[in-house]
Image (cartoon, rainbow, N blue to C red; front, side, top):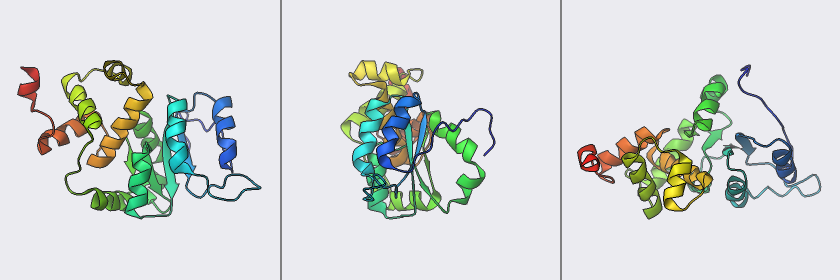
Length: 202
């Protein structure tokens, strides 16, 4: 990848080296996390990413996390996305190999990316019309009511951090199979989860 606007600031081989790298290079906007990464050179057990992802996202407000994997099991994919990941990339995904810069921009702008095969498994697990949690529905309603609000403004209204808002929006995008707020709102309207435009504007 050759893109003057994208800089690789660090690469680590072990999970235990991750936080020191993040601290010394803050702010890091995007982390690609291999599902197979071991804890350390002396501890080759797999890094507990499902436990770590929410903690990293809470600690580093600007961070987005994409998991890189060879696994296509729906339960695992759903658990990782529910933990707050902004993407799930399969190692044999040719689209990501050809369009990495575009995918990075989509994710850092607040969208998500899932490899086609992973997304199909995710949808199969989640069902045709996925349900939102009460908090997710509340956030999406606010997004529809106040289209210009930033994550920080939404967080202020709900008593949540901007990072938490971004994580919840990523979960909504994943459930709906979309990459933007506008598409998520449109999908929610189609499903009847939020009122149509004329009701919100009245």
